[in-house]
Image (cartoon, rainbow, N blue to C red; front, side, top):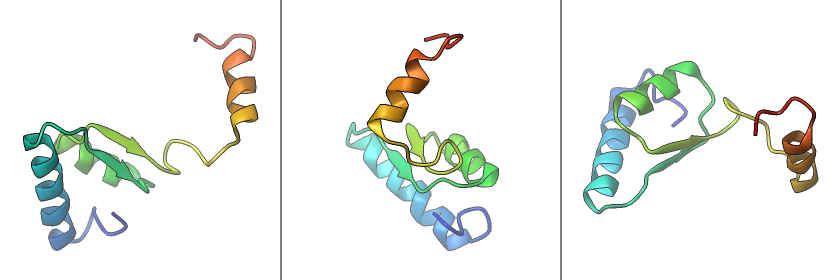
Length: 75
């Protein structure tokens, strides 16, 4: 989805894939999301889930446990 914010062809393909997946009763997950514009497009097109550097860099399982167990974590 690198050029999703600016490329109409990429937008058409992404929109079609999201629609196809949902019409098949599948959850659609966008990978490689890096920008606010990509998130906005995916939300506008009802993408179910997103992952990528926009949300977090990759971290180890140990780091996740530390994060979840940190004082003040609302979880």
